[in-house]
Image 1 (cartoon, helix red, strand yellow):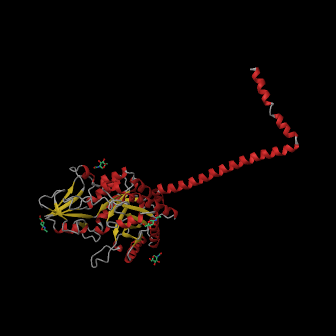
Image 2 (image 1 turned 135 degrees about the vertical axis):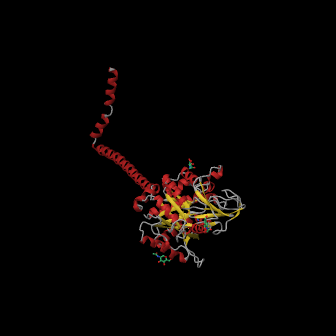
Image 3 (image 1 turned 180 degrees about the vertical axis):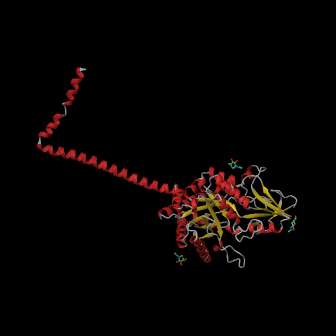
Length: 458
Ligand SMILES: *[C@@H]1O[C@H](CO)[C@@H](O)[C@H](O)[C@H]1NC(C)=O
Ligand SMILES: *[C@@H]1O[C@H](CO)[C@@H](O)[C@H](O)[C@H]1NC(C)=O
Ligand SMILES: *[C@@H]1O[C@H](CO)[C@@H](O)[C@H](O)[C@H]1NC(C)=O
Ligand SMILES: *[C@@H]1O[C@H](CO)[C@@H](O)[C@H](O)[C@H]1NC(C)=O
């Protein structure tokens, strides 16, 4: 112990000799101070650099976080800046097909005929994509302006322009192809929204990937997500609360191929599920079926058991779509069939083609009403107890449709499952003139109002 102590003391005295030397010789003293100062400077420089770097990183990260929060919390931002009328939390998103001058003389739904308080959102349909830009015909500008005028009566109403629809697949394919092309499109969105004082854009691409299985096809799904992200970024950069919504397919076979649902969920305000056209007459499906069943029928198995609204909603949830962004499609039109055997009238019976009502297998609700009024005694109306939708038949005419009872059932389903709301396709196919009086009451838009009132708890 003692020995060790001595050793320590010795080393303690080894260095002070040098320090003493330094202090003694005046020429060296200055150099010593300089060296010390230099070391001090170096250390503080390094410290300052580190601090500055850390600050910069923090600022960049903060900026990134802000951007990220914008993206992820689009829904809550939207809600804070857009309280819905009367505390109504549910969306009633209505498609309105613009009238066309190509059908002179035909009664068509005009903007002024739309009840301004019926919908929370009106999607004016459809603008096309030409040369990577939104394309509207001359007269369509006036139609859109007239729809926007409804906001003078209901300032809470949002008017969106719907782009695409069935038959405009090519316009999308060409447009999403690369960043430059998408940029052209996004510029045209900004221009159109400003020019027509619209609240947002609704994209109806039917469908990414699906139609053309070409070399680029398999990238379309990724390009679609990129497009949505770039539109959202642009909205944020402009500090505008424009809306971005999409209309998407219902059958899983399309959804699996066409969408990255978790990506869509990040960038859109809400998603309009096209939960209809589950069954229509085709050469490959020559049998009667339900247009928009809420649930599967007890006899349906495997693939057939997936063709209903409840399955589609659950599938989208599983794939990462926030229930708060799910807006369930409800049709106001029906599908017609011609039976092979007029005594074989069940769902799934053999059919030889479209029915005679409506056009090309589609029939609007007022035409169904008028038919049922006229042929009350000869027609049979059935409610499918599993699927919760009606159908009727008379001789070899067989029609699947929705009535106030079935759309109310669907609106209740939306409330029960805490989904965002209902999409209605379309206002044009509802009884906007109130022609069904005698059967369904004298109200105009009986289906749309049944949906809206049920969502509001009335
Ligand atoms: C994007 O695609 C267009 C048309 O296909 C082409 O002209 C253009 O060069 C492409 N741009 C880039 C950056 O690849
Ligand atoms: C909208 O575009 C048209 C031409 O397409 C132009 O005449 C009009 O001034 C524009 N309006 C606004 C508000 O930008
Ligand atoms: C609706 O879908 C969910 C999830 O697939 C299922 O658990 C539920 O039983 C379905 N409801 C009906 C009535 O089929
Ligand atoms: C329908 O049947 C009822 C009695 O069942 C009859 O009073 C009425 O006149 C019939 N209507 C038509 C349009 O044939």
